Image 1 (cartoon, rainbow over the protein chains, first blue to last red):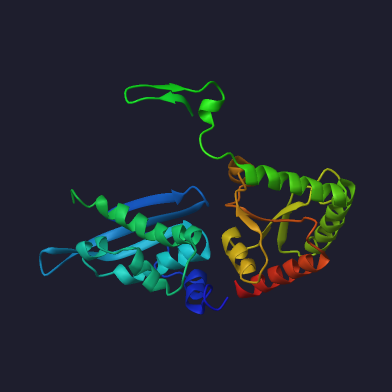
Image 2: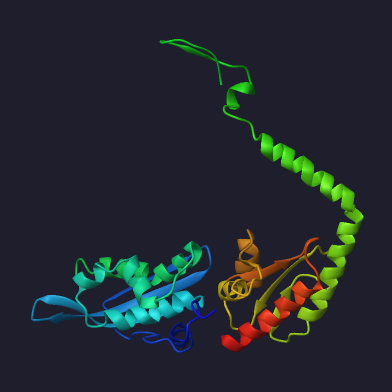
Length: 129
Length: 154
């Protein structure tokens, strides 16, 4: 118990950060994990830094799912706000695990990786922007 | 498998032997035989009676939890020792993992019945407990306690 449902994960689950609809987004995408029925959608507002680097100015997520997928989405959106698109695209499985700070079984790993997958797929829409 | 092999041709064996390459699952067949013998010794009527008793006890205890939704018949007639349920406000996978860490093994998800969950019940998944001859009433008590604790944590 002490490792899996740690207080900070439950905290993000009960009161997720950056949860909700974005009025005017530049990119948005939604995906479902058909195996467990989790559904996560992300909306991004783009910005620029130093007049050239494109950044994530704001990000919001919506969806339904288990504590792991929703808490991860909450933590991930907090982390990437203000980062450049290039830096976010480089985020990997290991970064998500570090964020969560817990060990996951292979089945629950899918829950934890869904938000990053959705975020990356949302960013691929940025090509022609 | 083959009947004959040379450097430039081979001839396969007759059916069904050509599809039976390698060592057959001998240990599996012997194990199945031993399992059948074991159950015959206990008596399948006794197995059924035990399972019914546990199912009845579990249905009785679980249905007292107002925040728990039980799917399927609420009595043992027309039911086997399998009970699917959901805890209000807690995702099935979260509840299953919580119970797992307390040594209680339940299945969670669609249980190979996705249309039933998605279209008929309209839930993301469910948890499912099942009983067998090596379970007793204490196991069901632990399950009930585990569910109560999960409700507090989430």
